[in-house]
Amino acid sequence: MPTFRRYAIYFAPEPGPLADFGASWLGWDAVAGAPRPHPELPGLPRPASELTATPRKYGLHATLKPPFRIAETSDAGALEADLAALANTLAPASAEGLEVSRIGRFLALTLRGDPTGIAHVAGEAVRRLDHHRAPPTDVELARRQKARLSAKQQGYLETWGYPYVFDAFRFHITLSGPLPDDMVEPVRMTLQTAFAPHLPAPFHLRELCLFGENDKGRFHLVSRHDLTG
Image (cartoon, rainbow, N blue to C red; front, side, top):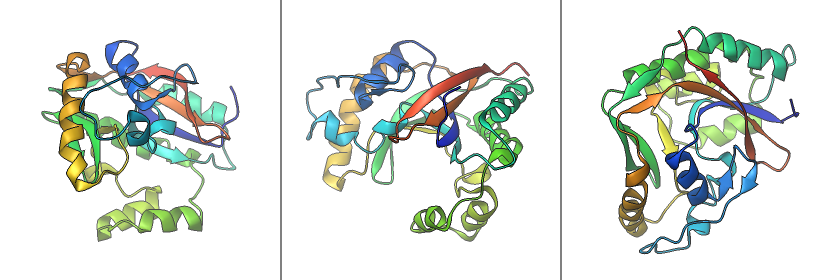
């Protein structure tokens, strides 16, 4: 396995129309580890390359356990083995589908329908793999604390290294960086139309994916692990 500076547990779409179009929209294919040309979409107020500059390096994904450095007591091989073992204990989870939504100042694919099953998978990934995570640095904590966190979210940050876990978790596949208010709705409508033919209904989470961040800050898919519990 290549050496990466950070690892993460993500959902990444299985090979198919959503994975292909999403990689093109972002301009980065994390599976192939290569840039992709952006699609030409009429109605965008700015080029896709500008709108996707922030999320591009992560690839098309939803965060289950956010990026972390490996603990001194662990290594990448042990992380991958424990991830495979965890996947064998968890059942696939589903929701009605996906839609393009606004979250704060950015746009993302979010769930339609009951998110409980998918949130459970994410919570187990956070909890049961946490012994592989090195504690966050003061710089990492300060960056997270710039957000307006509730007392509970602050506690999650201190305990789990990330504020948006468990009941604060919201499954989303980020599609843009921060947008000015007057651009959010035009871009959302354009993306809803563009993504609509590729969105599964129902939506299934069948795998846990291990991703690694290289020394250039780009994330790559390392391995997929079927949920077979």
